[in-house]
Length: 439
Ligand code: GUN
Ligand code: FE
Image (cartoon, rainbow, N blue to C red; front, side):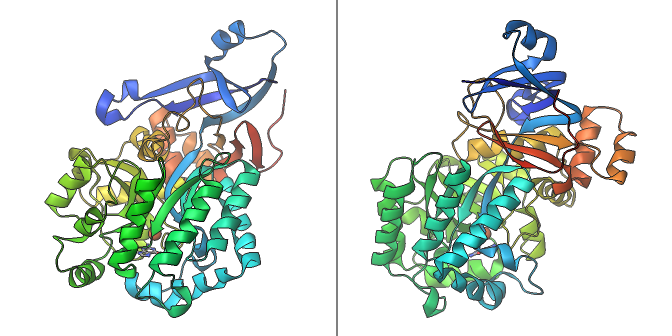
């Protein structure tokens, strides 16, 4: 129950600006204090107010010229694709066949999986990502290795074993029976163990038979609170392929709908090319979209229309989609999200972007009561950001005239270099350097 106070500028998201207006959607304390005890936020607010109501002997750590905010939430990423990020020249289906499947084959080796899981989680921490929704490979052991490493760091992670029983090389296929049994065993072992949560993970409609999609639906019906993650309408050729494989269904989303895979804990990556009727069904079923800007640009998939999805009251989170995406950094991901909206004549306010990367991600994952901001009682996953991390950022920041400008510059120019420290459940798990001085 040892409490520690962190004193710095503090910014966190309180709500969706689209719902409550900009001013009510965030809190900013120029000289703020965050009090953490037992892995949770005990107090937060202006330094004078908070320190006055806390015990006089409270330990205070002060950060000069830095900004505390809540940890970033990446709603779609593939840990086995860490070492194939930036693979040249292909769009989705050829990229999968030429690069992705051979890379994922390596995860048949549990030692390889453990090494990459370690590298991956370290990389998330270096980039200020404290929670992610993560694909493994088809191998059960890949997800075992992932959860073991994540649990060791006490990180709140959602992950699952890929289910894939057709249209991939034999070495990467499971069966409806083995996919079901392996997923079930992983759920029993890891779902709600510490901070770990399980997601049933059919890769995407083309690589699962009807029998397997049906087994995925059965798992969701059997286990309360388990998630679903998959891909949806990312690429035009992919969509045509789904139509040809499931001619009896109305469209891509309807394939998943038919097997009972929609709902408030179902996260569909990309959804770049949804029909009007599909948008309606997504909203009505309270299903979630993970918007993956760097991936959509890198794989040439298309431009995601965020305001259109919000009109349909679809919850949207941000995802890096590494290794289809090109960066682990949620700051870089925000920058590309901004540019994609610009190409469609939409704006993305920095406070809205902060919301999407934190509280909006938590809402997308139905974890808004646990993470997403630094309100009292939440789990203490937070970051110390360095707004002057590079000479250019420093020069530009000194020429920024208010909080919104500073935040926007951080988002356009920032990356892992701007993450000074990352805290998980109250513990510092990453420190960029020793520049900070404890007072
Ligand atoms: N669709 C099916 N599998 C994948 C994958 O691994 N990455 C992306 N971006 N899309 C997919
Ligand atoms: Fe993906």
